[in-house]
Amino acid sequence: MEKLLNLMGESTRIERALEAVLAEAVGPDCPPRLAAALRHALFPGGARIRPRLCLGVAEALGEPRPALSLAAAAAVELLHCASLVHDDLPCFDDAPLRRGQPSVQRAFGEPTAVLVGDGLIVLAFEAVGRAGAAHPELTPPLLRVLAEAAGPARGLIAGQAWESEPEVDLERYHRAKSAALFEAATAAGALASGAPPAPWAAAGRLLGQAYQLADDLADALGEEGDLGKAVGRDAALGRPNACTRLGPAEALRRLDGLIAQALASLPEAGHRAGLERTFREFAERLCPPALRARCAAG
Amino acid sequence: MEKLLNLMGESTRIERALEAVLAEAVGPDCPPRLAAALRHALFPGGARIRPRLCLGVAEALGEPRPALSLAAAAAVELLHCASLVHDDLPCFDDAPLRRGQPSVQRAFGEPTAVLVGDGLIVLAFEAVGRAGAAHPELTPPLLRVLAEAAGPARGLIAGQAWESEPEVDLERYHRAKSAALFEAATAAGALASGAPPAPWAAAGRLLGQAYQLADDLADALGEEGDLGKAVGRDAALGRPNACTRLGPAEALRRLDGLIAQALASLPEAGHRAGLERTFREFAERLCPPALRARCAAG
Image (cartoon, rainbow over all chains, first blue to last red; front, side, top):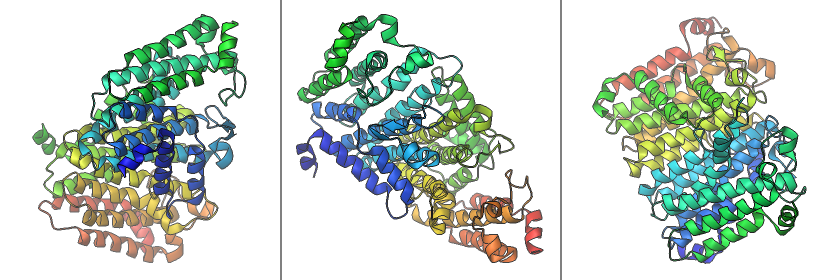
């Protein structure tokens, strides 16, 4: 079974793992509307970049425990989707669309959207608990890395909460809102493979910073549809934006620098080619040619 | 240290464990408003009956791993508090008060209340991850018991979701909304002590059913303030209520029967006295003398 999993592509493995998590959750006792909303929150997905980074690190390390690294990857994506569903709530962004379809709150209403976000958080940890049964010694550290990346101390929840504070600590805001889960993705891939997570976490952190910069670029210069979300929100809401502050050319230079740094920071490992490909694809997705041209044009 | 913990009373241990979880969460990187709201959600607490049941089972079994059973108890309470904070949101009960003080949503606003609930869920699993490092073999099963009790398949989240379904499956609703976490509390106390959880879970399930019955009694016959929440809500919202259906005398008889069954179902164990005391205190709290008199008067 684990051999077979290895022969599938990363993306297929991730979709199947999320399907398996969902199948466990939406059994006969699950309220039907909630079940439909959970599916809506997970499929179709976006680029699944965070779980791909997690699996990419595991593969670079020879992926000695494929079921565990896949569960870690699924957990990372579940936490990401949970944060999207809650960010879209009326009391935050009140977003009508997500990934080109109605957001969960629009399609199923606010109460169900609250519960879907809650449910995805629980399912993330449950997935680790299931796969961890065969590798108990790795379960507590995996749990902690994921909980920290999601949690109120310095994870996604802290990041979202900064938006409700009277004064925003911008560096902490970005670190929590964007970098924490990228960092956890690469750290979890290493942990699930029995490797020390710190050097891999560093690469994830740099990619998270690149993601934040790209998000600012797209908001300042992008066109509706590039990222599947509204643009010009920072200017409209008076939020700080690196592209506005630095100018588009300098912001792009820094973005490219962060990706190069992330690649250079990767520890030596046997099977890094796939992970390096994922990094480059990610960079391309962060700043697609049309946006790059707009940046260069200033 | 573990000896010292054992000498403290259950309640003190639980409050200190929750304080320790909170202290980890609200470090220098936590947004200050979120930190204050997390504290508000946890303190002062209610009866802490679920974590006391968890610890009571562990103590009945000689509590061989006090730090782990205490973490499990804290996790159970954190999941309970998370569900209270989200149930109180404007899109659900829009409750102004909780435990005699303004609800989190009233005191801190809706966005922060969403994030507090999310954060408490994450902290519950993080607490297990921390304490589990010393007992990794018990971490995956503990995780799963807690995740199932909270989750969308048949836990608290499923229970709350039944309230948004066009048709309610009443038995599943009550099992998910009330019994699941009681069951997990006793099961987790056994698991953390290395004992098979099933026989202890049964007692928890019966107490959960008793809790549901008592909730119906209080709603139908109670006075504002008995349970620190509004009464007459079932009748106002057209929700089914066991007291209305069975009559108060029969409902009380069944409640007493469930407590007796729960006591009788307890497995043989060395130090059951404390747990039995907790059961009786719980029964008294569920149906205090004044409410009992009103039941008997029909």
